[in-house]
Length: 196
Image (tube, rainbow, N blue to C red; front, side, top):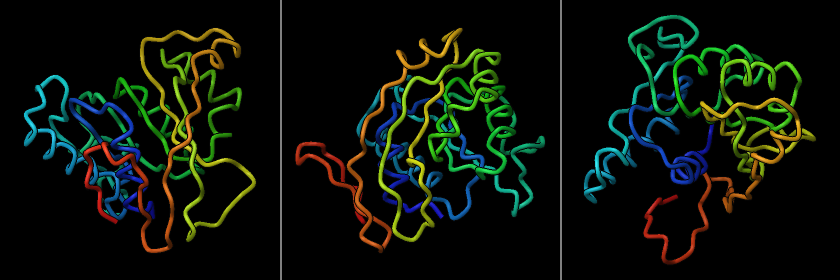
């Protein structure tokens, strides 16, 4: 389960707009964070082209399999943001690259650098444009790999490893896990009330 504070931090970090999808809703951390941001954007009068228009979801356990056609994933999306099953990340990447302009996956960042996944992204017209790294949630089993959110964007052609490195900016996310769902450390002027 993705801690809600971590999901909120990532949803606030990326410039989400348009039609958004969480293809692995699980307990709803990313879905709820995107819905809350959309509501806040509307309340603040953010122009339509700069705000989240709608948020949909898939969840295998509820009969809405992202890897198959279903009402939750029909059409095109501006953003797909999720914590996919890491054992199926290649299948999720392949499907997401056919459906969205921007894809953000929470996973260990080594997933972004296998030759097969780099080739899949390039052949699909995507490139890795950023990684946001952060500490492991306390309740998650840890590995020796860095955890992060990998942002892939459409319409950036990548031919070589050096190009990926030039385009990819790794930024730390100041998120702290207090063991109770986490908290987000933001500057006082950020204007966000994300709660616990």
